Image (cartoon, rainbow, N blue to C red; front, side, top):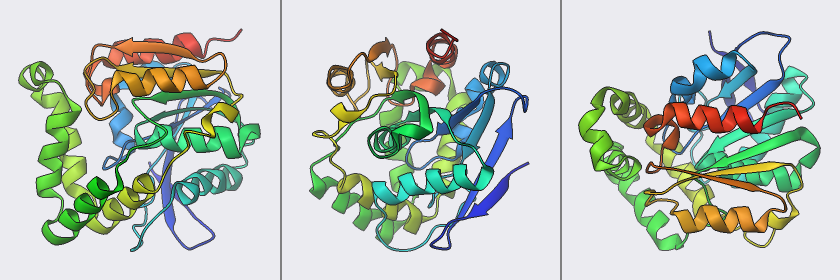
Length: 262
């Protein structure tokens, strides 16, 4: 059952918990255009060991979708306001793609709120800005359908798309259901983001997960992140962009191995 909080600027943020109330909290943050349901392939494994907190970013799922440009700073503040509202001081954090960008922001700006950090299929910079401007224009003029198909084509390998249509169908539905103004607002946040010079400030123990066949955040992006963060580990999975969907068991194993108590 989803619940919600209201941020200081009046945006509704939907969230839910899974797993025992006495377990350490693991916060999951999703990719652009998806909802918290993106994490279903990992939930059985993760909820055995963690109190898993999922949420829909503003502009996504059942959270509010205000019009106008968002920022990574605003998306990061949404996480802080969620944790404050729930009385949670510190979490383990796992974010994929956009969620990983928010994770980097937290590691830089709010290090005291993180125990450990997992950054999957993500980057500190996703330029050039012109590409994002074109995407914003497209979604504002034509809605989500053209972008939904293009995203699915890039997010999964051709072999996986052919062999596992049932795994991909929910992702396509999430994209189609996304409010166009929410998607556009989030594209602006990614367009304007550049954390390359600051990511070295991250002090939390960090795992970087990449996809060997990811065209959106290629292996070089994952390798650069791992090099920039002191002591970071790097795990590469045979997958495209949504590695948690394409390699669900390997992704869950990488997360749980990294988060084992010392």
